[in-house]
Figure: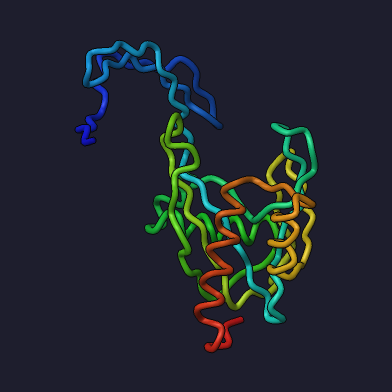
Length: 196
């Protein structure tokens, strides 16, 4: 059974809400079959990044932070949005990864390896998230948190965290989980190289 998929046509588009964090775009659409879908709301976030810092001893650096959407303090990765200054720096996702690692943890890395690029939610988000593995990580200063931000650091074995995720003992953002599995796969493939 073969169906030819086609994008929807947009007959009207308007910004129905916007602030420094988010933009809500409301589109009036028509499917290829002529069905009107109006309004269809799209969240126009900036692109996001997350970082898995690999410490010299083989552990990874994780964060613990209050997340208001779920109302809980949860385990996660160094993460954030691409900012205008990152875009001006050239490779925006790489610049954002370096900046967020420094700001949230006071650490820097000698190199960043791109693990994957994915859509957080292609159904109604327009942005992408790039996941990085940071190598040659060391502490160079103190964290510099954004207003309202407070991040605790935790050092853990990647295998232990993945086991906790599989058992349900730990719940994390799905984009962070995907990045952790990508890091585990990459590290397994390159285990003989002794990367730290």
